Length: 273
Ligand code: AMP
Image (tube, rainbow, N blue to C red; front, side, top):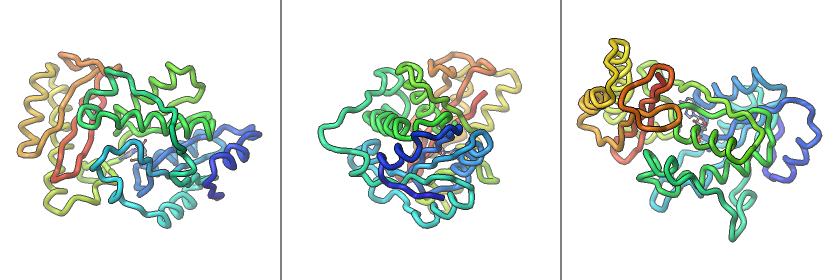
C-alpha cells in the first residue's frame, strides 16, 4: 500500500491509470462500516483509493473537531489488511488555502434535517468531496446509506454539476444488537450506549408497522417518538428517496430518518423502505 499526502502527487500517480478506480472517502477512526465500503470498492474495481481526512470545514464552531477520535496507525493497518492500493492522508494545508472557492449546498435539501442544526455543514461536506473527487478522479465512489442526507446531496451535486463519477450507496453496518456503527459511538458510556439502542428499536418498530400495512407517516413518527423517549429527538422524518416529505410510506421509495442526542453525542440512523 502506498501512502500519499500531496494532492498533486496523488493526481500525478493516478493520471495514466487505465484501471477502474474505486474511491472511499473517510474521516478516519475506521470501523466495520468503513471496511464494508472498502470491500465493496475492492470487489467492483481494479484499483482502490481510500482517503482519511478530518475535514475542518464541515464542523461548526463548538462541534467535536478537536476531540474527534484519531486512530492513524490502526487505520493504516486496517487499510493495508483490506487490500487498499493507495491511502491518501493529507493535512489541512494540503487541502485548503486562503480565500477559498466553495460549493454551496442547495437551499432546501441542504438546510433540512441535519442542516437545520448544522447550517453550513453540508457546504463543507460538498466542498471537500468535490476536491477529493477531482484529485482521485475515480470510476466509482462509495458512500454509506447511514448518512442518507449526505449521500443524497453528493448524488445531487454529481448530477447537477455533470460530473462523471458513479456514486455507489452502501448498506449500514450494525453491531449485533442493532446499533449502527459510527466513529462517534466511542463517546458513549455504558448507560448511554444502552439508551442509544432505542434508535434501532424505533426503526425496527417502524418497519413492523409498514409490514402490517400501517403506512401513515404521522402514526409511524408518533410511535417512533414514543419508543425514543426520554432521548432528545432532533428529528424523525419520513421522506421519499428524492428527499421530499411524504404523508405515507411508499414501499421502494421511502427513507425514515432519525437523529437523537444521547448526552452531547448526535447519533444518526435510518431505514430504507
Ligand atoms: P466518516 O468517516 O464518518 O465520514 O464516514 C465515511 C463513510 O463511511 C461515509 O460514506 C459514511 O456514510 C460511511 N459509514 C459510516 N458509518 C457506516 C456504517 N455503520 N455502515 C456503512 N457505512 C458507514
